Image (tube, rainbow, N blue to C red; front, side, top):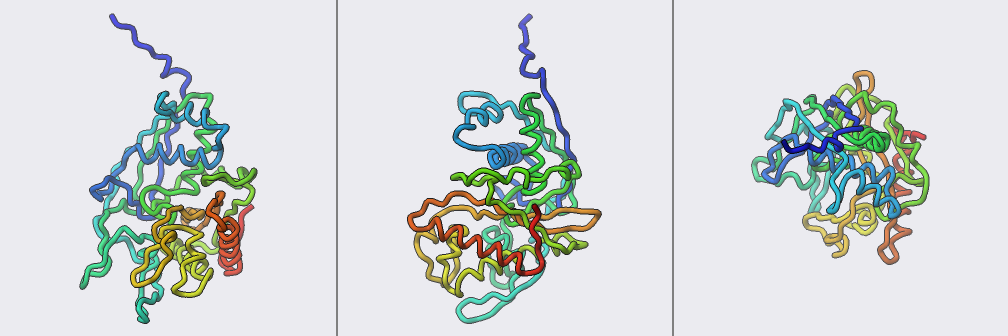
Length: 323
């Protein structure tokens, strides 16, 4: 009889969390069909571990926990649930006026936040090429790890659930979830140290929340979506995209002349928009996690642009900083 090595199953902890989907979750495969898969959640836990703990000197520990080409992962993730998927567009949310070629037209803030997930069809408007998991759906996430890594994995899981999202456009508030399991976690306790070349919690990080709460998740997302849009547009005059290019790239706008390095360059914005559920109502939050910006002549402009945006958020009178 062949012996079975059970050592890998010993000294392990397992966490099972029930979550509720708050905002449309564009999670799925290349075919555009929404579905629950374990891989994106495992990748997200690792990503948030890097935000909380990452650094060059900690890479061996990251590989020991999550695996590498030379070692197996010490974290397992399973997701299950009977979620509702919607093939049509998500709710529109608040409308605002945009301009193109000298003309003004209404656009949904949700479409603004979901840019790239749809195409315009004459007579139909914006037609989404991806289905989404509907708000109100529920599923479970089960995470297993070795006892020695439990605290770090638990913190990463809670940070992911409390401040992140899942699927496409998660930084724009899509795929936010709620679970009381993460209510006791405050990412502000990790706001120390200097910025890194990647997104991380550091002493320049900031957390903003709306003072107002809403009965509906889309209303809460509309509130912070409009604020983010206005703060970004406030950086420079219309038809100029240089300073906005320091916030995130690429930028593609029809009928506009955009510098090539901004049109084709790539770096994610340092903001994470998400929705929280509190006592049956919903509240928007924006997490700011800056990183070092290395473009020649751009490092100072990058930070200056974000400082102006952060000031705009606070001066709006809608948001307050959480410390």
